[in-house]
Length: 316
Image (tube, rainbow, N blue to C red; front, side, top):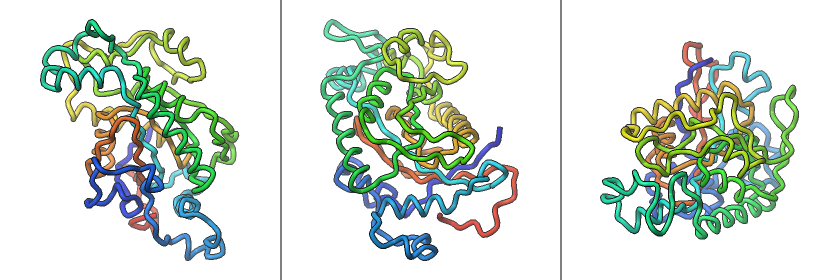
């Protein structure tokens, strides 16, 4: 499997800009944060600019840097990730009630209290509403802004993420062709569960996943990646992953995606901690997401050990 060095291509989204304050930012009011600007593709195909939306032009900008033989030795690749945090979970409410210090000291290691259970936490009513609001936003984006629908949908194996992904993408027109001409087009929402996409692991019971059999019963429309174990073999009660350990896991996840996924636009439904980790690995500035929020990132991946492509630009 090829190894990659990752970076974020800046200058395309408001979230890339230092002046954008994460706590005040509303991606639903800003076209996902896509900046209004001209692209190199506008010069190469000026006849395509008139009558197209900013997202359609951005889509063309990204795809002009991809080719059908991308997986046959091209040393630089580009993908757009939509990183979505799950809606509010029962554990988020409990942490707020007890305070972060007391939560980390004692309560996070418990399965729950007298009012709620947060082991592999479910969404709250507010969390469901947050995911439904993003569904409404996606519906508008697809119809009006013509934002490219993701070609792949990956999710953490935690219940709150599986539920968020379903609520976010349910009943949307997500048809789009796969850029690999030899692969069948994906004509529907086909979510895949990735073990590596789980939250920072260990100690906290909200991050101890349910058995595969339980998840298959509760979420029958999901595909579980090959090798997904029946029981959670990764969670430990006495060690919480460090930043370095989580970052190494996210690097393996990214290498898996870039080696095996032909799609240019990809959705990942995950958690605050691993999204922070992904942003670190991708060289993106820190940008913390509220529950239910989404951040798009334009990713450049360079294959390690191969000569760089001739005429590779500093940005697509």
